[in-house]
Image (cartoon, rainbow, N blue to C red; front, side, top):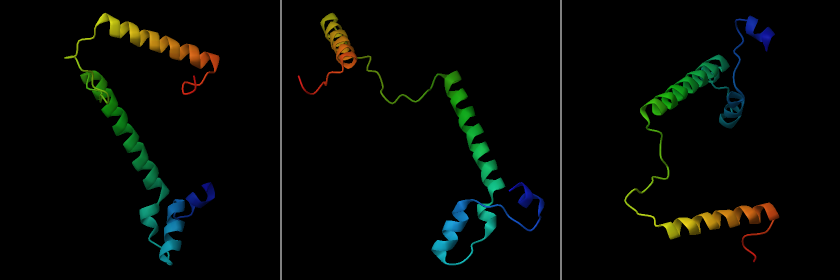
Length: 102
């Protein structure tokens, strides 16, 4: 590949070019499949994604897939049952027991 980079008339393309050309039964334009272009686009997407994450952290607006309901009051008995269930789950997992067959 390094040798090919030095030759002006050779375009280094992704494997998609080969696949798509076979499917169309004719060679497609290499320009759309050039590796340098794809690498640059991938790097730009990565930088954009990183900047978005950092902005979300600063703003405190991380996507919340499981929104908490603050309007629901949880009593002490419910909390104890939940904690007991978590502890039982951990013990069963550590003992190698199945949760479906008791």
